[in-house]
Image (tube, rainbow, N blue to C red; front, top):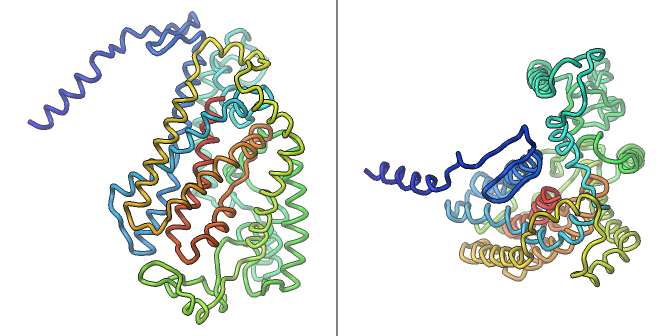
Length: 445
């Protein structure tokens, strides 16, 4: 009886919407929608893509929940888990809407990462180019060609991803000298520097900083120079000089170790209240990191400092001018002129949503025993809001983003030392808030 009632309620909710009355005339390139009017089918699909783009993937907050339950043997219940996931995933949307003037509307903010999706949608709907039988696949329709490539890619991935995983990281030098530790450190793909990187797995190439086909050449060159200088020359020098006891540890991995070279047992230095036991820590061992892991932490701080200086030197006048002319119409490019047909979501809506999510977040961290003080939470939101603009400008012009995970961990370690759950929450609200907001900004573009 209850089930039938629920089904009837759902029917009553959806029936008045009358989906069949929404005429979608793709052949005439003219789409009507109850919520607006789209001039071409790609605009409707772009709107759908924008909504999907901000909701796919795994919420970062699930890592906190997993650490609580599996690692610290702590469970606050489903209501806390839902509130934590919702707030950490959505509070950044308000920041995104308030920064559209700087990150969406200017023509210089091109967001290279969204161009492949835009190109794909236009390619599948463009009908002006005739078929060319002189090229391979020239007689196929674009949809058929796209389907064949998608199916072939799906099938091929099973080879390096499952059947022959050595094709993902082809460190062939280590195959020749499998028992030589120096060869593994220099040419190994998972615990070495991979000096001759070969792979037949596209996901290995794109799995860390994204596709190399998207960023402009100067961004790729900058990454390559940093790789050679810091992760080849510097890492080699530091490791073989035994800096930080490096030769007792792997050269490149993301694990933490104790003074015996074993994986660090954090349960030995945590109290039943999930705080750091300093006496147990001194009796056990300090933390030891691999060479490249230690370098990556240092470079994270350097990147944040360089980010602020770069934004001030290259975009300072532009940002100041936009603040002064907040209500003045933009010097619009063609894209913005076309988009003026559609009414923008008012800024007060984003501001209201932002404030509402902050209040809900405060309720989440104060009602439950998270040990996360309210003013530290507000500091995390302030950090996310402040860095969203400079990091967004770098990402919008290069397609390469910078994370705040190391910075937020460092700050919280000083504010509330010895409280791992509070640190994870500070990191999530300070870093993931910004990341989610910039993802939404890219979708708005």
